Length: 290
Image (cartoon, rainbow, N blue to C red; front, side, top):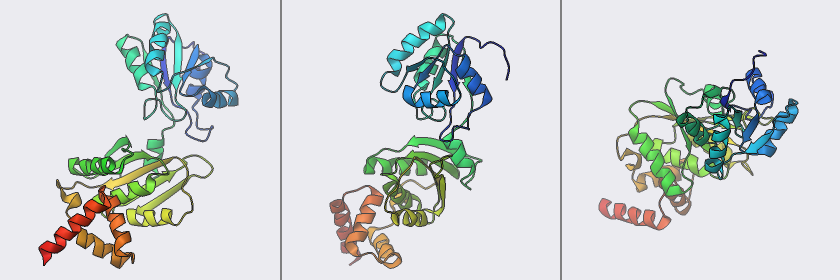
């Protein structure tokens, strides 16, 4: 470690995503030498600082106060302060607070220094078994079924070449999200689900989306922070929904032995529509086929 004094400016510091040993020597030096640490949650950051004997004062800067807090911190930075910004885990600004403060510092002509380190996106990607040549981080998908399905279809039709898509997802939504992925790209679409990265219960589920869904369905509970990766291929506009309800119904009845009622519930969830709307479409298809 260098003993050179820390230059004034804003330091965007990546912190561990689970295992506290995943902190860089440079990050420790910055956290120890800064005038204060702006934290998403001061209680969470204090666990890390205490682990390494760092007594630097902390201040909260989270999604609910980041705009107001940024104005205060910018004034301090203009006066020569050295401020480190951290999120609860990983790299600030990546689906976490930090972007607003960084943009404000740049606009004010204040030096901004990235201190790289742990990232759930990259950790999941390199161990996924999927292509790393071209990938896109999308963050969190919309929580509502219809909006989520539409977002996935838009991504599918907007691709110009095969690409790995990376998402964060909550455990209580992962089953429905995987159903939507299967509805858009098909049951054989390759996915990787990274759960509890760098923690004691770290786990990867890899394979066809249909198989991963079955593995999760067999569990009593689904817990932990998750990163979902999809081996996504371009689809022509509208092709994600071209399979008829009748054909999909027959597929589910044959492959999984589902009763018609249960199969229709599955298809409605996959397509992000109501069961009544799906039923009407099925009746229209049956009428046309007579």
